[in-house]
Amino acid sequence: MKRLFCLLFLTVTLTARTQSVTDADFRIVGDNIEIYYMLDAVSDIDIQCSTDGGKTFGPPLKQVSGDVGENVMPGKKTAVWHVYAERDMLYSDAVVFKVKIKEAKRTIDVNGTLIEMMKVMGGSFMMGEKQKNNAPKCNTMPAHEVVVSDFCIGKTEVTVRMFKQFVDATNYKTDADKYGGSYVWGRGCWELKKGVNWRCDQDGNVLNEADYDRAVIHVSWNDAVAYCTWLKHVTGEDFRLPTEAEWEYAAKGGEDSNRYLFSGGDDIYDVAWYWYNSCNVGKDDIDYGVHHVAQKLSNELGLFDMTGNVSEWCGDIFGDYEGGSQINPTGKDEGSFFAVRGGSWYDREEKCRIPYRQGLVPNTRRFDIGFRLAL
Image (cartoon, rainbow, N blue to C red; front, side, top):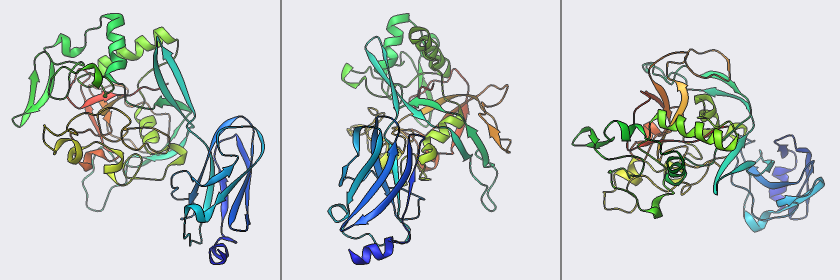
C-alpha cells in the first residue's frame, strides 16, 4: 500500500459532474481512500476511477461503502473505497475519481407501456471526423464543433411492443402496408417482399409475442414521425426523432464521453449486434438477426444499442457538413433524404463507427432500420 499511495499522494484529483455534486475531495486513510462531496438533492450515486488523468473512466467502483448507491440524502457525504478489495495493484501517477449521479431518467407511462427516456446534459463536442491524409472527403467530414442543449433520448430503440400499441390505437397503415411490403436483402440485391411490415422479423416472418421486445424494423421515416406525433397527442410530451447532433452527442456519451470508437466501448463485440455476431453466423443460429433491446453493454449515459442492432432514423434532412461552430443544428433546410445513424446487425465495423451516417428517402423501409425517441 505504501508504494501505491506514494504514487497517488501528489497526483490524485477528484472531479464531480452535474450541478448537484460540489466540493469533492479525498484523503488516504490506512488502506482506503475516503472521498468527500456535497450533494444538494436526493440522488443515486456512482463513483468511478480513471488511471489516465480523466481521459477514460472504468465502470463504477464496487468495493465502496458509505454514501453511494441509491437514494443518497443531501448534505455532506463520505464514501470509502476499499482499494485492495477491488484492485490488487493500482500503480499510476494520474488517478482521478468522479462522483456521478446515476442514470438520470424520465419514465413515461403510455397506457401501461413504460417508455424510459434518459436525460442528457447539453454541452459541446466535435461532430464528424477529421480527414485523414490522402483520404477522399466523405460525408462525415469536416469535424466541427457543435453545442447541444439539454434533451432526453430513449434508453432503447423503439420496440415492436411499443409500436404495436400505436397501430392498435390508431389503425395506422405503415408505408410497408401501403406500398406492397418492405425490403430484405436477397440474391445480391434489395428485394421488395410482399406482406412484410413492422410485425415481421428480418426475413419477413411474423413475430411471436415473445419477440415483441425486439427493436422494430420495416418502418419508414414517415412511420417514425407518425408514431412520435401520436405519442405527443396521448402524453402531452413533445416526442420527436433526435437530431443528428443529439444522436451523435448521446452515442459518444455526452459530457461523460470516454471517446470510444463505438457507443459504449472500443470492442464492438461488447456493445453491439453487428455483422460478425448476428449476420455472419448463419440463419439457424440463435444470434442471427435483429435482437431484443438492451442485451449488450450500455454506453456512458446508460443508452443501449446506439451502435448496431438496427440503424436509426433521425429528424434531420441529410446533407454534407458545412463545418464551423454550430448550436443545435437541425440539418439542411431542404432535400429529399433523411439521416440514418448507428449501423445495424447487418453492417460491418466500418458502418458501425459513431460518426458514420447515411441518407435515405423518407418512405424507405428495410430489414435493418428502426428508430429511437427524443424529447
